[in-house]
Image (cartoon, rainbow, N blue to C red; front, side):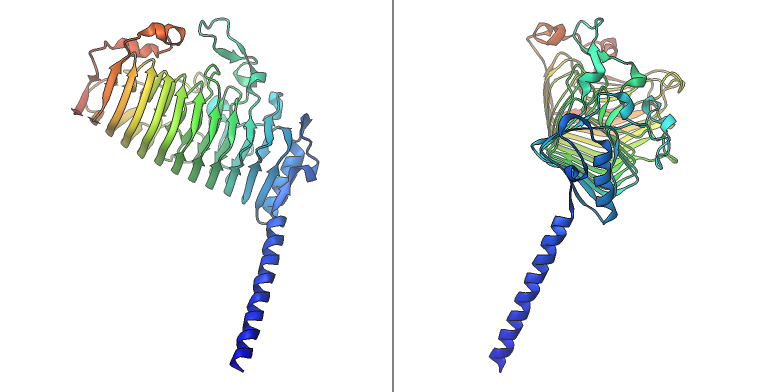
Length: 440
């Protein structure tokens, strides 16, 4: 009797496992939404905005899943990522931005941001996510900004840099924008040629992961930032290769387009390779707010204008300069460790608060640089307009070398460095800094 009961029990368990597997298989199949089933055409010419958006909408409506981009080059204008959706771009696919700037739509009805107070007074992006949760962009395919359609050679640039062909008002300002989102993942994708604007803007988001990305924005592109983290919390950036014409990774707290002021905190950057025609790492800008508790470690920086920059220029009227915050800046508790820099045109580490009454900086303190090695054309500089603003800056186990090859070995004769760097002589490394410590 016991044997028979055991046999019946085993049969019942087997049936339950089979039924569960069947339902799991059906669920997995039901959670994949191929954009081709909605009419998308990967011929590299057809505008597929409506088809891709339909797939996203249906996927989100049933509780989420994967929207599959596969087998072709799919041209789109602005699409909206919805809660629960993983936009999955397969290795044999390209999601390409339209060459018509009017297909990159501003978002006057956005819930989380005020378009007028966004940089460039514009909220346009190719992929926009507005107050949604549990979203992802994954796969080994490519998201292509079609940037060459929006730039041209700049005849005034001896270095061969590009300029916006249609001016700033008709150039898409960014490729991907997450605003007010929670639990965001961007994994494995290749990002190419953002259109003279930022690749990613992470704006007032929580719990964000970037891992194994490749971002190539071309160092000659104007304003082509990599990952711009603004007023966000718990952001992890790891194992990325980033090459940009502007800053590679940015931490800011510009709350101007938000309903309330928000800090930028707990950002970690690890195991990345960076190259920039501006700063590889930049902290802060005009009248940003609170930026704190961040770590940057195990990084390589090459052929860049500046390695790590904390730069605070003067404020201006919003009509003249749109990318500025509305608070006094605070930067504190930042750790930079195990960083190797080579071929740095300007300062490997550059902290400057401009001496101007419109420059609103309350304090910069507790910055630690540990195990940093650099070779380039200049040495670090930390400068404040007066005592009492910058304090507790620590250098430990660092080595900074002037390249014996000199400017002639660098691109454009090494003249790419920030003009402001030239205000300080090579023997001056600190001005109005309290407790600046350098230890072997």
